[in-house]
Amino acid sequence: MKPDPKTLERAVLHLRDADPVMARLIDSVGRCRYTVSRGGGPFASLAEAIVYQQITGKAAETIYGRVQALIGRQHPRAQDLAAVGDAELRAAGLSRQKIGYLRDLSTRALAGMPLTRLARHDDERVAAILTEVKGIGRWTAHMYLMFRLGRLDVMPVDDYGVRKSMQKAYRFRVLPKPDRMLRVAAPWRPYRSVAAWYLWRSLEVPTS
Image 1 (spheres, rainbow, N blue to C red):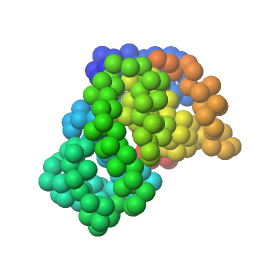
Image 2 (cartoon, rainbow, N blue to C red):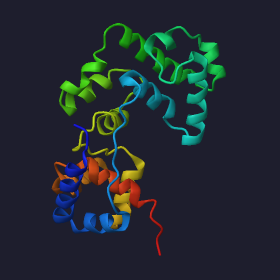
Image 3 (cartoon, rainbow, N blue to C red):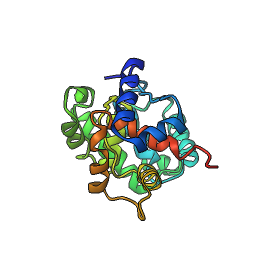
Image 4 (cartoon, one colour):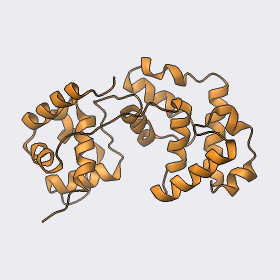
């Protein structure tokens, strides 16, 4: 489901009523601009997510741009990556590990992995299918659910930004672990994705 303006408005009202700490974050961040990307297809979205793992956004953008130039397409397809040699991908800046991840994703997609039908499944099933691919863990699955499929009740407990923001907002002494995060987030349901968006954005708000 795409997060349309009316749905986001309902989500923000719910979060305000459910949690005074979240209400303060909403006031500091402002209007919700949570969006979903539909361009490029599911394979390209997952390939891009793999490229972006564990490196800075600027470096990942450069490397992904080289991959796009290498295959001659803005949105890679499984057959495109399968046709490119490892040496060329290494020259583009990809590590051997990430090349292996992309190879596994391409192989599975060409063998019939149901990427185009993921939206038919519930969140747990989508995550289970995606995490069968080498290099795709729970974090990537959560990002896909939130920003590709538009699922509004995902709690990305492995995301450092969400953990750091929650620690700051709730004045925890240490970064919260998943079980504590889920307890805090329970009142946010069914709009935990929107709450996570506010947690991310709150880190960008200057503090006085």
